[in-house]
Image (tube, rainbow over all chains, first blue to last red; front, side, top):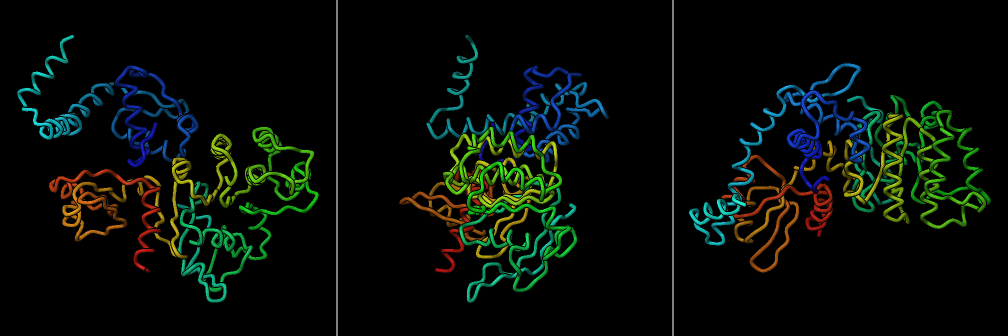
Length: 119
Length: 292
């Protein structure tokens, strides 16, 4: 589940966001508690708490006192916007760098993308 | 952070050997703290001083706000499982279960039974005849089931196979969540346990090298790889912890700064965050390079 080196709380927050994006949890759904997350992922509960707090701060999750944690209304849009902003740095820049190393011209790259996108 | 343990300028010498050298640190209450470092870094000595198994040469130590030495109130809440923990001859697991109940009021019989069951500990043989792995399981039994507010494990996994170690981590985490308490674990198996820890103390030659949250350290250093001349240029003004080269290519583990990643990328180097394991190993190597 977790890679070697980046902060665990960040990776857990990303994975929970992914779950919302993929529809595992819909807006309004309850998500697992901090202790459940800690046991399932075998991580320190303080780390799980940090991941959840981050998502609460971002407006992805809401805490309801005494009830639990839920996916906030509008969470899907929030996550999608954030992911789109990060898309260039995460995917486009490395793709271009690899293409340059291999001598693939940007025009050829566009053709490749088009071809892959049409089934 | 509320501290369960506070050490100030703690030094322990054995004749000409300085095992701990002016250690100042505090250990958070109700957290799981990892004690990392090479053999001889001072991990066992530090735990022995905290639990009053040994007396410091100089410096002060406060456990739950008090001097732990000959302090029944503090030591009654403390459980220290050594890696080479000895038990009375003829002692069998059931003896241990009975004795534990007398020493630790917080001790849990159900949990003890679960640990015996999980590790399939024989109850009809003398403890001194058990295998190394079974002895470790006995230590885990004593440490976990005591539910002591302060529990210390010194390399609790010796001789345990991968499955048994996972069982230990699961038992530890589940019981800690149900009954939060201060737990200190010394270990070399950093990759296996780091996700269970909230804080980490790295000792090196009797001194504290790091005292931080795990997630803070997992980003503390970067591993640069690429052409060695570019690495030399980029890292000239940075703290290089470890360097390795293969002809014109090489890698360097470097303390991360705000500019480092950008400078490395501009020089055509690949950067990745160094793992905690890599960071701790690099500290050990670094000191060796400097001293030799």
